[in-house]
Length: 317
Ligand code: GLV
Image (cartoon, rainbow, N blue to C red; front, side, top):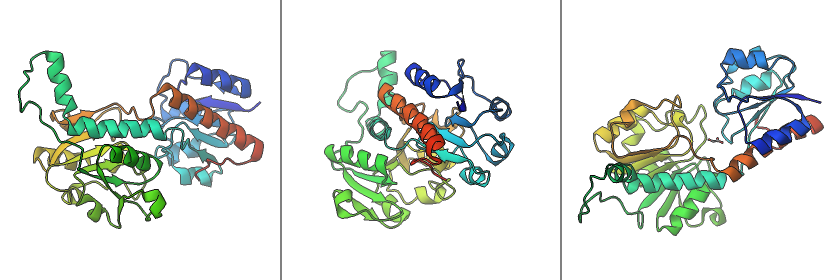
């Protein structure tokens, strides 16, 4: 039986299934392993079922025992893993696409609604019971007729576009390549980021984190937005230069932000906290029972398939 290190606690049904397929080294206290501890615990293991909280950088990967053949990441994003370093060591890296599209798109929409309709201030007022209804109390931005710019029209971007369209938003997008008209469903393509941002009353960041997208939203690119735009991020914190976005909030260039992901999670830049208009969530994108169950099952299937066939359809390196 192959031996698998599982770096974070999973839902019980998933751990039970793992035990039927592999010899497993589980993390029953859900401790966040240091890189050193993760290397130690992976001794004699054949694979690792990792999470986005594990920083599997080049140095860590190079110190893993030779027996490790697969890193099955319990996430669609794999920015936490140096996939090239893994490839050099002949270690397969897999992810969990598709199963979390709907749940993550729901949070993407929540971020848009929460930021546009001033939900953070509303929740604070309601909890403090110090609010008074008036004709102009917490007036926000209506979505109907508002232009939504989707940065990264992959599965999650497309689903957000579909829901946003049903709310009356007008969809624009920027992608490496233009989609075929049937997949665009009426959305307008922009070849450049500048083109997209200049028409985005609301920006929804949905692209993966990669060397090309780190700090893509920065002091220069934020200036392309119309004044008073809303910026939301359901993808990865690394895509945003926080100082620049906070400065844009300070200057009211940006009206509000809706964020689920941060650089250096779980610590977010304190500059966001001083802004009442910041609608912030703790990386809840895929956090539903159905989705987390399906993600873990897919991460398990990826390992099983890899050891049975030598590869996996969700291999990313
Ligand atoms: C969640 O953020 C994921 O990448 O799965």
